[in-house]
Length: 137
Image (cartoon, rainbow, N blue to C red; front, side, top):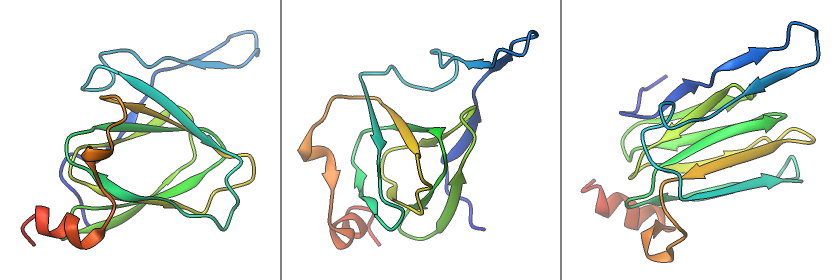
């Protein structure tokens, strides 16, 4: 597996109720390296569907698999690696300038995404060749 600079799994603190009533996880400022300006989530994604297929010029994202599982392909233009997300107390930090593709969604999968900025279409690379030009590759 190739490593991609600054893409990493981050542990989210998990509190287990001693009376067996479940678990609680909290994402606070000290967990992720940016201020959250937008939160969105993906759900009811068919198992054969593909999501993502883009990169951001400036946006940073933190993906959390709230339920179920899915895979994220991250690509810096030179190295690619696929990461399975399937634990709600582990999130994936994706810095700016990283192409991402999501697939292999399990039934009932829910992906929450915390974003460093508001939606801005100008921040997207939706064409892989344009992304590679930006990365000077």
